[in-house]
Amino acid sequence: MSNPITTTNVNSRANTSEWIRGIVFTALFGALFIAGSYIKFRIGFSTVPITLQTFAVILAGGLLGATYGFMSIFIVILLTALGLPLMGEGSGLSKMTGASAGFIWMFPIAAFLLGWICDKLFAGRSRLTIVRLIVLFLSTFLIGSLLLYVTGAPWLAHYLHWDLDTTLRKGIYVYLPGDVLKSVAGAIVIAALRPVLPKIRPSK
Image 1 (spheres, rainbow, N blue to C red):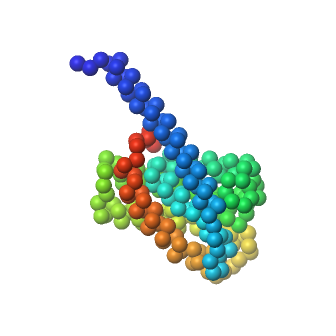
Image 2 (cartoon, rainbow, N blue to C red):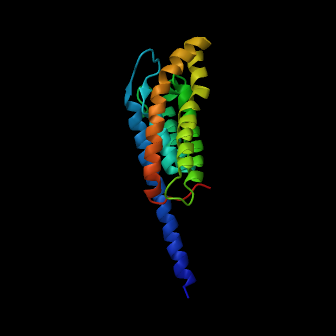
């Protein structure tokens, strides 16, 4: 017969360990998001530079789950809004209202939603079925990429005084091939690594 006190102590230590891992992973993926902000390049008629920010958002949500995925991105954005140069050029109010601001606002929401879906997909499973893998890819593309345009494209059009045709050509279409590649790569990484990551305190 097990000792209730011993069992309680073991569970308490396990919960504490999971909380600590959650904090550590939040910091690590926040750092990954910062690094992705500084890796940028332009192609064709792209106005907002292409970065690895969205890839970091996909990985944060997919690997950490809803709560920690959200926090890892939101904390970086909050610190940037307060004046720290963590997301490439600019910080503070100018960064939060610049050409790419509409995308930035949606980053933590995308991480949360993708994390919530991945929490459901991987619940009690070490491997995903083909159907769940397809759902995972569609989620990384629809939420980790396309959802960002819901606020990103209209704000970009407002900021640069573009009409609808210009917004579609220069603000959306030019980025879609890269979005597909990042979504595929993100889904592969999530499917491979999520089952073997150490347990962190689950989102509630």
